[in-house]
Length: 109
Image 1 (cartoon, rainbow, N blue to C red):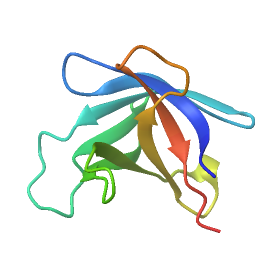
Image 2 (cartoon, rainbow, N blue to C red; image 1 turned 180 degrees about the vertical axis):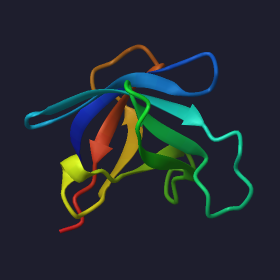
Image 3 (cartoon, rainbow, N blue to C red; image 1 turned 30 degrees about the vertical axis):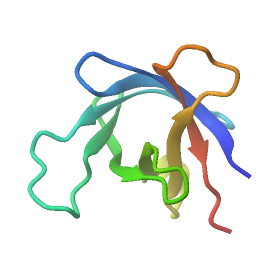
């Protein structure tokens, strides 16, 4: 079952601003379009903390069943331990504002 570990709001530049909150970790983050993308393997977005440290990437995807676009996120940083954290940007539950998105954690185990 997916769990919200943060919330972001769409920005005018095609990115997102918000926060990531997991247990004792709470970080302001910015998800920016990757203007330097040169291959399909590179992320469509790069994720930065408020102190400009890159902690992940995001890939534009389309849902198989729904056909709706979404962003698949991968986080990796020493604060998260040795494993990567996988999540998706999805509509925040109970939210009427289409610009507010939840970071939904997808546990692999």
